[in-house]
Amino acid sequence: KEFISAATELRPDCGVNRQLIELLSVRAPSAEKKLNLLKDIAAEHDLDWDPATAETEFLKKHEDLLVSIILQ
Image 1: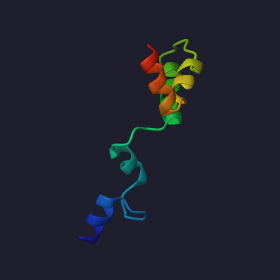
Image 2: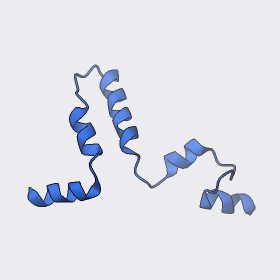
Image 3: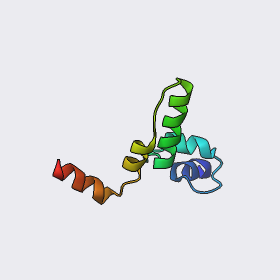
Image 4: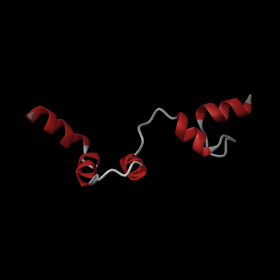
């Protein structure tokens, strides 16, 4: 019962692998993780892709994104 409670609440040292917690998480991955994944995909498929544009978009604050959407 204690293990299930700890795993459900994802408390530190709950006995659930940290990577499993991340993979099952409903939170969006960080901008850094997204960029790294896109870079890996581009490299794996030999794509000539400049991540600068994506990096600029990913690193924008939420307020900046809302203003961009409203102005479009």
